[in-house]
Structure formats: C-alpha cells, structure tokens
Image (cartoon, rainbow, N blue to C red):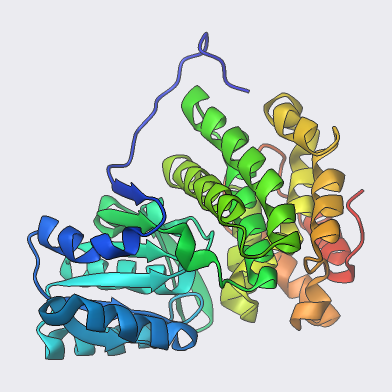
Length: 355
C-alpha cells in the first residue's frame, strides 16, 4: 500500500453529494442550484414508472421522461435521447437509476455540456466518476474527462429498498471491484487507499444483511455509502486488467455489466494478488487472508452468479475474448499475457474457484 512517506498525487473530483433518507425531495432545489429550470428525466424501461413519478413531482421543472437507457451506453440510444432533449426544450438532465442511466446522462452532457443531477438507485458507483464507456458497432470504448462528471449526486437509501436482492448483490460486487483495482492502481495514493478499504468493508458487511433482510434501511444506507466510496476511487485513479476484461465482455459479447464484474473480480484479484501483495493485503484480510478465493467464497455465500457461461458466453468465444483483452491492454501490476488471460477466462467461464 502507498504510505505517506512515498511521493504521490491526489486529484479530487468536484461533485456535490447529497446523502440520506428522503433526499429525493431535494431534486428541484438541486436543479435550481445548477442554474437550470427544465430537466429531462432519464431512466431504463424497467424504471420508467419511477421516472414518471419523479417528473410529476417536479411539476414545471420537468421537461419530460426519456426511458430508453440501455447497458453499455449504445451511441444509437444517445442519439435518440439528444433528439428528445432538444424537442423538450430541456436545459439539464436528471438520471434516475444505475450505471446504464448514468452513462446516458454522461453521454448527453459530453455532447451538449448540460448539467447532470444523478439520483443513484444501485451501487454502480459511476455517478462519481469522470468516465464514460460507449458502444458502437460492437466495440466499447472509454474516455475520461471532467465534462462527463455529474455535478450533483443524490443518495437516498429509501430508493434502494426495493432493489431486487440479486441486483443488489451484483451491483455491490461491481462496486467492490472498483475499489480492489484502486488499491493496486499505478497512480494510487494514501487517500484513495483509505476510501477503497472503507468502501470494501462497508459492502462486505452490508451485502449479507441485505440478502437476509432486503428492506433493512441501515444495511441499505451502508451499502450506498460503500458504493459512493468505491466509485470515488474508480473516478480518481486508473483502471487495470479487471475493467479491461469487463469492457471486452460487455462491449464485444453484450454480457450484462454488473454480473460480469461480479463473476470476474475474484479471478482478476487472484491474477494480480502475487504481483501486488502488499497493496492488496489489507483487503485480503477482510476476506480471510486470500483475496481472490475469499471474494469467490463471499460471492458464493451471497448467491451471486459465478460462471460466465451462465450469462450466455460460449466456450468458443473465450479465445476471441482473450485476444481482444490483450490488445491495447490497460496498465496492470502483472504482465497481461494471452495464455494466462485465456486460462483466467476459462476458470471464470466454468465458475471454478480461482487458483
């Protein structure tokens, strides 16, 4: 782990965080605080009813609802949303939901510079990152820039009480993946290391409680707090092998985002554990001393998906996935080698515990 005796750089991403039960009621004030007056409310089709209810509560501050957000932020959907934004005379967006909706809000802001207010209802963490991943022609590319960082994020734990347990688990493991990568990032620093460990600890404690008691507000609050910290880490330092593999599987094979992260994080942690042992030691101690295997055991205990084959990835796709993953690889503490990555993907495909 980086210590204060070592040189480091810490860049804090500016954002206004509004946290606590009942804070959904603050949306109108936050719109005004951004100097805006007419918000286009964004959501996925699954959350359309909630988005329409929010739009009604905003009254004249609502410019309508666009409820077609989709995984991996397809450029074709963004183009539709841009047309809806212009037709409605909107001057800002309110993204209600998780990573898919947040990504759409970022994509709109990238193109027209509008203010973004996010009402986070999952543990995605992307709401506090200046990172946007977009998919076109079967390829997912990412960019980083201040212009896609949301200005305001509202965390209301009451909005997560109805989040299905399965989605809660995979979303939470997705957030843990952000923090694990932050611990061994090339540009890690003491501040992000503290955030990462606290975020992992909060989610480790909260997720079993959510599985047992889905409407436990204290557990939901803890999970949302943890996801905020993990997302902040992701937005502050660089990504490595884990995110490269997830972008490959999501963009090129259309695998679901959170489930893919949940399945891969034990395997990518195990892949890097020997090369980044000191950086990962505190996190490993949270899971019995072995991070890769411990995360797999934790996920299994939560009833999380464990095998890529269960998400629809064919065994015949593994060679191509490995080839894509080693093309223009992200920086990683252990060399990214084709045969080793193919073996990692094979174990994740079969649902085997990491070696």
